[in-house]
Length: 192
Image (tube, rainbow, N blue to C red):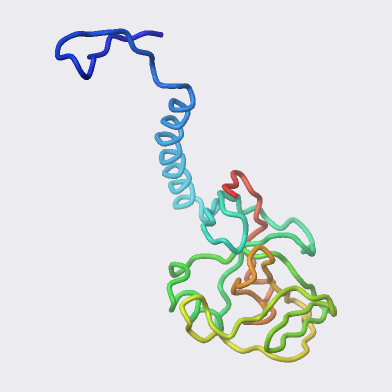
């Protein structure tokens, strides 16, 4: 499709130019539609409770998730949203990693009866190496020091993240009551 455009170098002369490439049009549609969609999802969340969640943390895939009912038993490897445990709140909210009231998104790494071990440098579940343990966060602030050999008690699970090596998860605050889970994380649109 051609449009009449001013020729930038010659005053009042006009010439035919073409509409921007289709990829630019798609980008424009995304730029306009995504904020509207996010606004609509926020309205749904305000009226019906948290049903959708946008994860911007690198500890799990970034994107838009539906918080679905658990619908049965918890499974290893399943991603869940849960309330920040009391012992972790001074770190998560106090250091402003998340806004107050935000949920954590992590993978279920261990279930009741499973064992985990944390030492100064390593984290293991059922004697399998999961990842490193840091003594400080990315700003040099000290992290909680959970050290020893533990068994996940009944009614608890161990949240982990294997996306990045320095995720704040069960290696720092231990097992979490299953009652804190708000739902299963079902990806709708992932960014990475």
